[in-house]
Length: 323
Image (cartoon, rainbow, N blue to C red; front, side, top):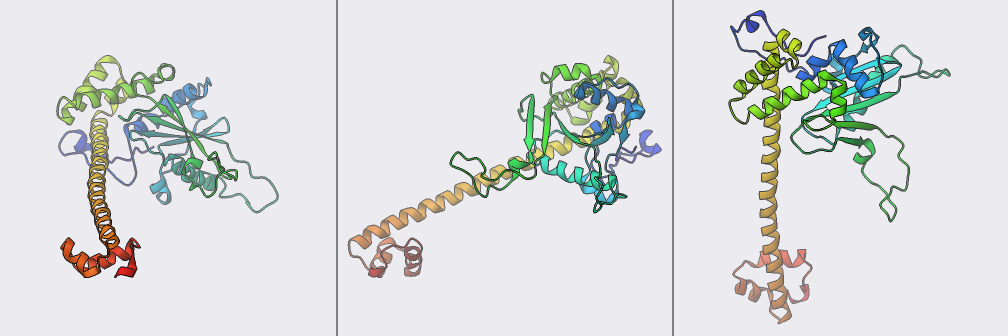
């Protein structure tokens, strides 16, 4: 299964820079867990099962061009259940909606040859949605993200509860896999533990040195210490490039959020200052109106044109009889 990156032989030999195929998202997480053995190990750790045959997995990660904009990280069927796994280095409350789009596409493909208008029930595997989070924003060990939390509230009771029951719900389990979190799960899946350790080192070293050097150091150390050793030895060039690409993307998104926050703060301050000036001016106009001053007198006293004063009086519905 493709990992979403095109790497030529010249690239692997170091003769030209790596270039990502950006047709759909690809990450180290995908590269690792598209391997059936690793994916089965992860499934067993999540479900508490003890399957041993990786061929039991029917992997059906969305790769069709129609679904490229909705491509999830890993989805597969085993034991008549459909599991959709997503890795996130940035927390997003919109994941339930994304999962809804994913599962709709999956079910559409699964039932393409079925008669959905017939009288016979079309059986579909029940889904399970899991998010593996390793971002820098603090998050709990486990968290349930619900589609209903995204709904616009049209009507609610006095205690804030919806009057009408939710007709469509989707629950996704988010697991924090950063160091010190969900250690029992990671002990049950060494590959997940190794992945978390590798990404933690990249993040740590990138704060001390250039990103490319940080990734190279993390890869060298992990191979020496038996962390993702087989994967990194086999895919060293691609893994290095993908790690740099991922971290740059994560950093870019973080900087964009910070910039948007700063711009929003500045705009809010400016809007607040303007609103404050308007309120002060309205107060002064009202006081002069109370003293029987006419529009021309108010404008002269406040050193402003009459149209501005008139407009504010109409907007604030001040005493219009004195105009």
